[in-house]
Image 1 (tube, chains in turn red, orange):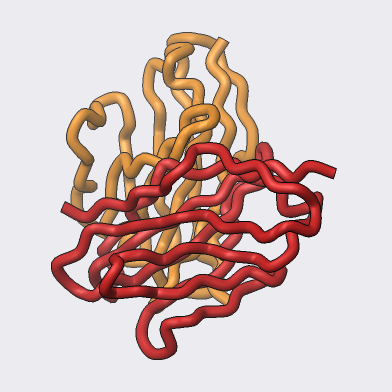
Image 2 (cartoon, rainbow over the protein chains, first blue to last red):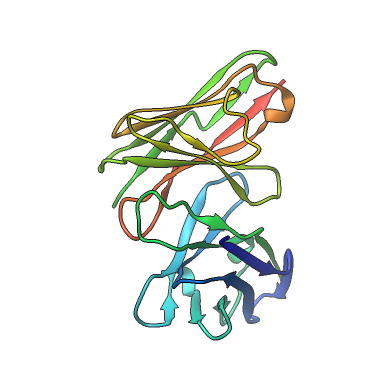
Length: 115
Length: 113
């Protein structure tokens, strides 16, 4: 079965510090990988996605993620955290490009940014 | 880009009543839509997959008689929470996949009192 593991339910960083949110997936076929951000009482916003091609994916707000097949990982990074980055982050996976394949989400990581 | 419009954004209802949540694809046709539920401070759990013109496919543990899903057209899917109880209070989100990515509704915060 498809699954996503996000290591660390809560990550706290200082403003200006590196952000690293970890995501590993289980796979028997090439995955489609996504990172979403959710602010309190709001819906989901897509940060970035990997489908095919370049393994280093750049997203919005300075975030990027690298697909590492050998490690089955898709960690999210940002060089310098801003206070506005404080939110819940979800890694998600799909194993097909079919329109009837749902996304499977990780449990989420809450990012806190300390001034 | 592909937009999914979800209404209402918030609803408060009395215990025992039913609530309908609508999800519309505004600029594309969605033969399939997905319904998720999110408990406070938790992840999104897939409830069901709705397919236009046919019965929805429910995930294990989801009561199909409580969470009625209808996908009568290529642009509209509805989730009706029947005989709602306080434990049904949650954040419900719909989604569709118009291409390689997914698009999500803005969610509905249901509170049952």
